[in-house]
Length: 503
Image 1: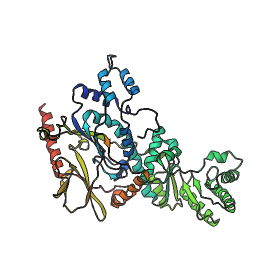
Image 2: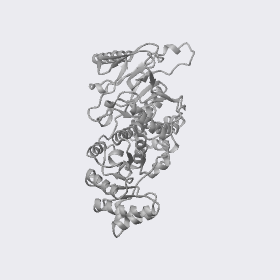
Image 3: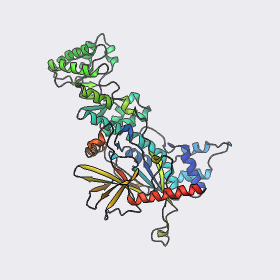
Image 4: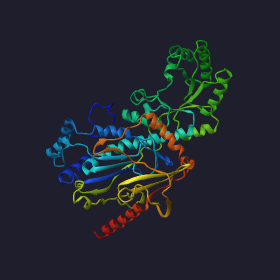
C-alpha cells in the first residue's frame, strides 16, 4: 500500500492471532525456521470460470513500508491477557522494533487470469515474518481480485461500449472506495467518478450531474441551459428527474443552443424506469433532431446480468455507469482466499557447508473432511501451457521435486479425479506464472503502470476459450497437479490420516 491515505504505520493491519503466534515462535526459539506459505483461493467468484489477479502493487507498497513504529509497540504493550497481565514481554517488543523483512516473495503479476488452488503469492522466509504477512496479504489481494474480476465480467458484457465506475458513495468506506476504483479500472472500466482515485492512481474520471442540480432551478430547461453555459465542453444531461422523454426533449433544445456556440451535446443519462424502452425512444428522438453522435448513458443498480438483458432487448445504450453492484461485489462479498503453510525446515545452513544437503524440507498440509479444504504441500509454481489458440491448461508443480527446465515430458493429474490425466511434451509452449518480487527482503520487481495492467487483463481474457468466459455453467479451465506433486500429496494425506488414527 502506498500509504497515501493514512498518516500512520500499517503494520498493525493484522489479526491479533498473527502477533500472538509470532510471539509464540519467538518464545519457543523457532522464529527463524524457514517456512513456505502459499496464498490461493478455492473457488472462482460469481459462479464464474475465471478470476483476475489484482492487488500486488499495494502488497509491494505495504511490504516496503513494513516495520513496527514506536506508537505500534506502545499500543502492543498495553494489551493484556485474561489475568490482566501484559500479553507480550518487553523483550519481544524490542525484537519487533528491530525486525527487518528478509523474506523471498514470488507472485503472479496483476492482470493475469488465475484459477482455484493456484498460488497467487508464495512467501518464503523465517516463519515469524511469513506469519505476520498472512492477514495483510489476504486483505490486499482478496478484495482487489474480486472487484477486478467483477469489472472484467462487465467488460465482457458491454463489449466495446464505455464502462464507468460510479460506486464511491456506496463503497465500504474510504479505503473500500479507493481500492474498488483502482481494481475496477484494471478489470476493464474506462473511467471512475472517484476524483481522488483519479489523482492517486492516474485513472480517467468522468460524470454528469445529479437530480439536485435540476431541482435547484425553476424548471428542467433552465437547469439544462445553465449547466451547458457553465460546462459547454462536458455536457451530459440527466433527463429523468421528472419525466424521462420530456427530459430528452429539453436536452435536445439545450443541444441546439450548444451547437450554435460551437459545442455539442455529449450525452444524456437515464437513471430510472424501463431503460430498454426509454433508451430506444430517446435514440429515435435524438437522431431525428440531428444528434446521432449524442451518447445515451444508463445507470441505476446495473450489473452484468441486467446489462446483458438490456442489450438483448435492443437497448440503445452505449455508456454504462455501474456503481453499487460493482464496488461492493454485490452478489459475492468476498473472494475467500487463504494462506497456508506448505513447507518447513530449520534455519538453512550456510551455502557450501557440510550440512547444506542434509536439511530437507518437511512438507506440510491441512486435512479436512471437505476435499476442497485439503491444502497442497510443496514450494509451488504454476506452469501455464498454451497453443496457437491460447491457454490450454495450468499445472501446479513443486520446485524442489520437478526439473523446472521441462527437459522431460510432464504429466498433470486432476486433483478431484486422479484418473483424469494430461501429458505435455517438451515442445509444448509454456510460461511459469509466479515471478520474483522480493529476494531476501529487497524488491526486485518493477510494477507496471496501471494502464499496462489493465491492457494485460484484456490480452489474458482473449487467450481464454469462450466457454470459460460464459456466465452460465462456464467450462472448467483445466488445472491440475504435476504427477510427482500429486503423489507427494497423496502420500502425505495417507501418512497424516494414519498418524491421527493411532493417536
